[in-house]
Image (cartoon, rainbow, N blue to C red; front, side):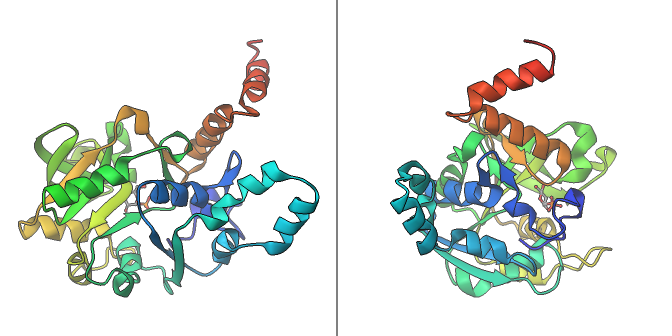
Length: 286
Ligand code: G1P
């Protein structure tokens, strides 16, 4: 997705936040691996100026492969297997930064008449992206003939102004009917503490809803407002609550980026144990 990444400056001065590393891989690689593991085979990246390194990352690099081959570095070669993930990757650009809703419109002809998934590139679901949430959302979408399914997570009430917040009616097994949505409300105006968690399944009628949304005071077309219009039309909008084992790692700001990096590095099968010992030493615990 396009966006200036100003919350992560200077790290994002000349590279997109989606390319920042979390332990061994750039964030965007986790997102792609998660989607592929959840059965998504055609992925359109909606990027923007200064984001061409994303495309380069997923391109094949025959020179690097032959260097690693002749140096007998099979372990490193394995690390590059994502280059042949088996998914088809496409790229387009949002030419002006007019918000998330407007970015989604750039995918209209790609989606055609089919339902599609939206995944925000600054969120990883599950440790090392081991989340099956998107597959569950697609199942819910089909089984309940929904117009939209949104992943949600509980956030502390004082943080509601960072997220889209949904109001739900009673549900069971982690699935709810959404009755109202507000983008980044103050805690006192928030209808709940359930935040939109960066994964959505949509029917193509969302595009008409987006076209009917007025820009907010920053000139941005909010996707949340388009989903609110679906609710107003009486369409079935569902929320799928992330299980505790599947938490969302938000890379959009430094505190949670630091935390995510450390948690993923600690879980690294090769370097994790030694890293844990270093951290304990730094904390004066060893
Ligand atoms: C976007 C959405 C918001 C959602 C959030 C999750 O906001 O507009 O509804 O809760 O992503 O990361 P952004 O973080 O792009 O401002």
